[in-house]
Length: 430
Image (tube, rainbow, N blue to C red; front, side, top):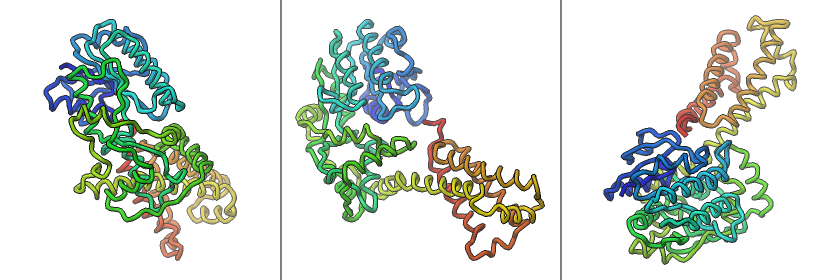
């Protein structure tokens, strides 16, 4: 088969492409910035397309010639700029599906989500349901697949739940009673391949889930055990506090959860596993086997970095912002001017240097909070700290011997910034 995967560079799209390639199919990968790199190395052909911009059937028709199947694996959990639920989950997919109907594409698979039904309440679920309903009303051989939480290395769900499970004290909203039924990515893409190769579930919404429902507490405990961590210290968190914290997190770039994910979790995410078992020919793998024992150390490290790096970023931002505020007059201005005089700056030049440096510190603090994935933020801090250290070493060398270590503390600061520079994905690769 010649299969077009929309969203080929995404988590599910990548794994599905490799599954199809292993079984002899030809994969056409569509992505916003198609490149033959490690993310889409499974593709026989690369196409450029953007579900947020290609909003009419005419945009899609030229790409559909000679295809045996189309899979829509485009999806976002959080809106950002033009990447909205309405464009990516509704307008773009509907244009694609209408084009498939006009072009006579033999098979269409829509990857939706469990919970995108008549009880949907989150923006994510409601938008997915709207496109699902439109697709099933068209004269197409189509199936809507509704996976539960999908777990796999590098996936959003795996990142969120392993990070959560790895915390020293594990917070549990509503005592962790929410019901989930995670499905491993390998089982999901195998089931999707079987659906593409056959004609099962034509015109249906098909739930794909793990073998059994678990409480959130059971899921976190199982992941924690798989990563080789000891028993958890559970903390039951009142619902209002959870919602307030998540509301703040929704404004934080790279936060692990927001109000959308919380709403979906509170609703529950379970269904019978019969369809999944039938497609696979065996029961899907249980959560206890999600983490390969040989990868336990790696999974544990990655899980901890998922919350330690944001914590490190927050602490660095606090240093820059507080330093800037203090320099604006909380710390005696006369004392600051006395230090600057020893560097050779007095009068107006001293004031310009003092308040200019304070403004720069504040700007770097704000950029640290908002500039995730932008290397210039970290390089600016490295250059500035090294400049301060050189200047102070020349004019105020006694500060190296100060018992509070005001200069020596720049060394761990530089190491922390270097760590963020090395581990954060550059913005241009997202």
